[in-house]
Image (tube, rainbow, N blue to C red; front, side):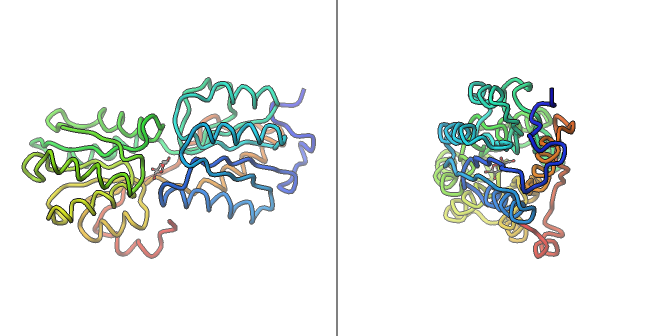
Length: 303
Ligand code: GZL
């Protein structure tokens, strides 16, 4: 029998034969916008059909979109799961329908036999890299806040775990609240933090799980009279907004998280259609950006 996921055109499928289902989780952040553009641009460039939908960060909408793609009989499903849990049933349905699934971006807790591959960031490593920055800054200890991403998402879970696994014991996370990866939701969370804790006195830093929430936090910090540099803030993603926040002195580091996954996912999808073996877990190479060359790099940033 043909390897799982080999299409009828295999091993001679071309992009013209490919229908990729991309049930995008939402449009919550600049990162997500760039991720979506990366898939749409790749489809246009390669000439494959992209079945796109926006789930507005609701898992039930993503699951419905996957089911519609199974009914349609697409070649491959590239799923960016909004949260880690709750995917076993629909992934089993795709598997039983003979449709290969690539998990993209965030991860799932489902059995790995239910999908062909995962392509995305090492979220734990991103959290560890953020911890390294606090450890370097506060050798004698500190009290910090955490503004976390979507509850239950692989990105927030991984970053939080990685951060705590590497943070020195003398740096205390005195409070952590989710801002659901959006700028708008981060503003009231930061305002509430500032009602409870005095910047500088009660806390000296903030770990923020993405730049969009960071920009929301800055709005609240400014309104409370906090100045750039009063606090040690480390964010994640490395968007243009994050680079500008480093230039303006608000962020002291920005851990890269690359959204431009379209090309890799397209290439892997065609290999699967042609019955070729692919890696089970492909992690994106990423780095950490700093204020000292943020202005120089900003013009070349792609998102
Ligand atoms: C990370 C991605 C996260 C980004 C956020 O790979 O899932 O979701 O860090 C985005 O900006 O909303």
